[in-house]
Structures are given as structure tokens and as C-alpha cells.
Length: 161
Picture (tube, rainbow, N blue to C red):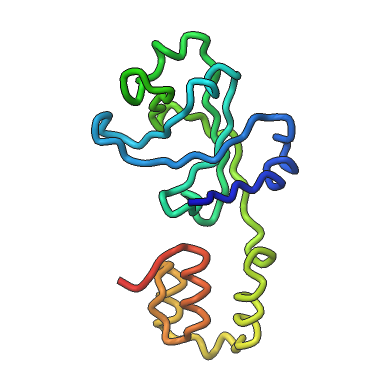
């Protein structure tokens, strides 16, 4: 699995000199909550900035990129739970992460091909159906216009139920 951390995005938003990593956020059954795993060597460095991803290497939040921080604690061994006894990783509960910055992605730039298709089929508003309106409001791909369903899928990461 290759996670694609957009370092340029964070550099241009004021974090060029920060230690930023990509981390998978998952539900840990032992802690009964969402968490991330962090190496001991990272905890020793100072504040850790991270963007969170799922197991499929997708950003955890689809429409907005979010940068979190784990504040530095010299006594991190007492602050966080070791993943396994003797391991080099610690579990950091999601609720201990500090949200530092939220950035709207430039959807038109990042999805140029999709938007070109969308605008090539652009229709007058008087051709919008109730189903199209519902798809937009519900953020669900229930329209009979394929380009609208693709746009909703791409932006909100949803599929038909």
C-alpha cells in the first residue's frame, strides 16, 4: 500500500518546516476507539503532524484535507499505550490528536477529466429533475444522468445503496 501524502499542499499552507507523516487511522478493538500507530522514534522528535488515511490509502476525509498534530510529551511512555509489549510503536487515540488545519481540495484541478466531462454535458437548469435535485441534496448518486452520479461519487466517495 502506497499512501500519497501531498507534501506540497501542506508546504504552501504554512507547514513547510514541520515533520509531517501519513498515518492510517483505524478502529482498535482493545482501546475500543479510533487510533493511529506512531513509532517511538517519531515521538522523541517533537510535535508530529499527520494526514490520516484509510487502509485503502484514501484520505480519511474526502472533500477536505486535514492536518493533525500529536503534541510532544517528554513522558510519552506514560501518555500513550504501547502497541505490544516491547514493540517500537504506540497507539494514539484519535481524540488526542489536535486538528491544525483543514484545506479544501481544488476539485476542478484535481479532477479535470471528470469536470471536462461534466461541463461537456452541461444542461440548462430547467432540465433538472426531482431525482437530480435529490442526488445533489442527499449527496447520493441516484440521478439518471451518469455524469452527475460520477461527480457525486468522486466528490463524496459514495455509491448507490
